[in-house]
Image 1: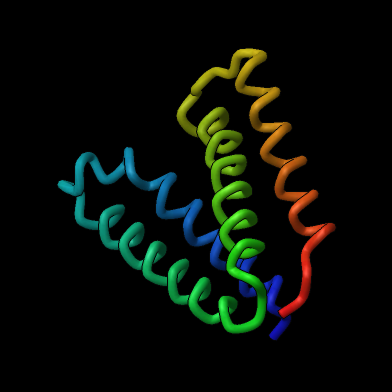
Image 2 (image 1 turned 90 degrees about the vertical axis):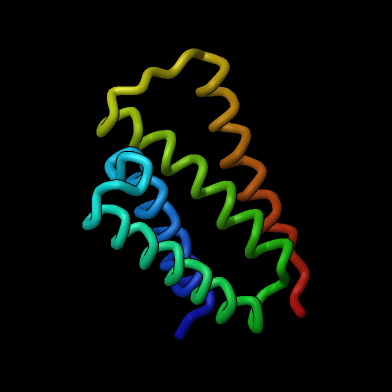
Length: 108
């Protein structure tokens, strides 16, 4: 399987787990807590798989950066959180940073 697809799966599961944190109500709700725990577990499993194929700096920059960006965007829609211009600039810089890291990566 393509290593970037595995990394993308890791990002998706990390974002899903993070988005369920408020729904778990401090881990008192069984279903959201179970799904978020499984999501984080799958995310780390996929990270471990892809760490054999890509440099760790690429993996972590992509996982963390795109995770933060995705959670911020989804929180705007699902949790009605607002953005100010500084947050928008920061999110833009995260995307630029992840893009630069991936463009100028070196292979193992």
